[in-house]
Image (cartoon, rainbow, N blue to C red; front, side, top):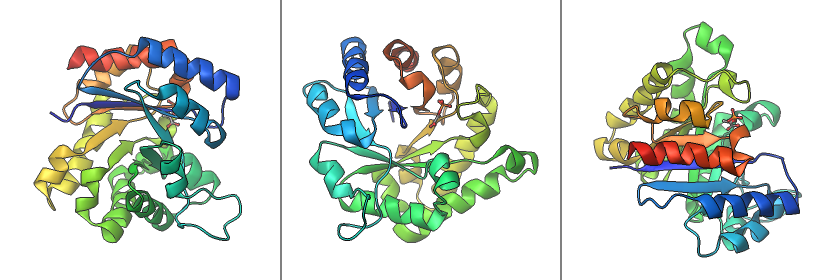
Amino acid sequence: MRGYLVAGNWKMNGSNAASAELVDGIIAGAPESELVELLVCPPFPYLSAVAERLRGSGVRLGAQNLSQHDSGAYTGEIAGSMLRDVGCEYVIVGHSERRALMRESSRIVAQKFQAALDCGLIPILCVGETLEQREAADTEGVIDEQLNAVLDLSGVEAFSNAVIAYEPVWAIGTGMTATPGQAQDVHRHIRASLEVIDASVAEGVKILYGGSVKGENAAGLFSNPDIDGGLIGGASLKSDDFLAIAEAAVAIC
Ligand code: PEP
């Protein structure tokens, strides 16, 4: 059993006080389950303070991005080793906002994925198509290109220590969730793409769905065989909303 991961991407939201209140609420209400792991990904400046509050709880800490470089003259960048140093276990790579707004190519995303692995972080690789690409029946082509960039650089074995998040761009922050059937089809495609190379890696890798997940639609999504949890944006900013999604995962186990 792969279990579930429910991950909150807080994006560029909050303050010192707000992140403390949010994480305390999550810790206080976190369900006890061996099979459901909770993760929060605050903005960089709040990582250390959130790490302190998480100590002794089962809730994990992650970052939203990292540099592809180890160290040196890269003003404003953050190395994976620094994230480990402040208590991160996970890091999101290739979020569609970074691909689109920061022009991160699949090659750079693959380098970041490898940089995360090199310093012992678990990368959460985001993949997903825009509405135009879906309407042009190119969803699988887009996912293949994003996935293959990582497979070419790091190999399939790398996915023994990684998570994939399918996030259709048209569903992020729009309230337009993929139907459970649409999401399951893409998740199956992703797992099948790994299966042909290494069946046991494919069986073990968690594939999260992201895109307007809420307490009300989480159960319908998570009850599909290839959906192993969610990467949550908007609904991760209120502890009750985030915990309702976690409870949906617990109820399915
Ligand atoms: C996200 O940005 O990763 C995301 C899934 O956002 P939302 O849940 O708000 O759609």
